[in-house]
Image (tube, rainbow, N blue to C red):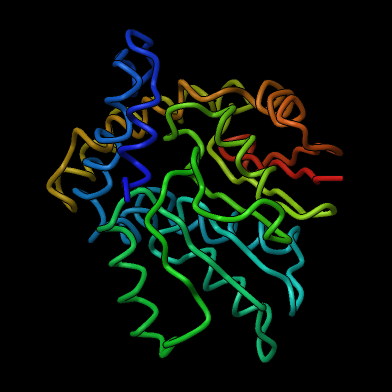
Length: 262
């Protein structure tokens, strides 16, 4: 069987470019580059999230689960969620009930390994299927999930529109799509401070804590290249999802996008 990533790479049009931070790279090179970034930072990923955001990412993820309102009996799919942060929150919210199915799908085996270890440390021996796969070519059946979530991962895919189309494909009619992602700061003074922080403090933290300044410089650049709130909402609608709504968090540093497959 051809691995999903190889199949996806082989289907790329020759010569087409995409962004990898501020660099333009051939489309078939981006996924391996992204996988390399997250392989490098996997062991320190959750610690870095706490340090970079001062723990605020936890509040953003709580807001995401609040809006999702998971219910027992639903089938959940969390994309780019290798370390399990969103999956654990869904399961905690469902306790003592359990979903029919909760899958975590991530591009990077190293991130999946961290998630599995965290699950074992929490005594979660069952309840989550850990899958290494590409958000643009999901290894799940059409109409198989009640909810698809993705937190801080959409900006790392090669083709955002294909990933959105795949999310719609695997949703059941009446299913929910929810995306948490860094976005455009809506307060001018905060935007200036945030820019300085992103391009000075983040790479420094990456070097000191994870031994990898370049990966965190890429992450800062990828945030700036990601579509603003309104543009992403339009692209979600263009993928065939309906009732698109946006909520800014912390002045637009992050944003939640919600949509439904009708």
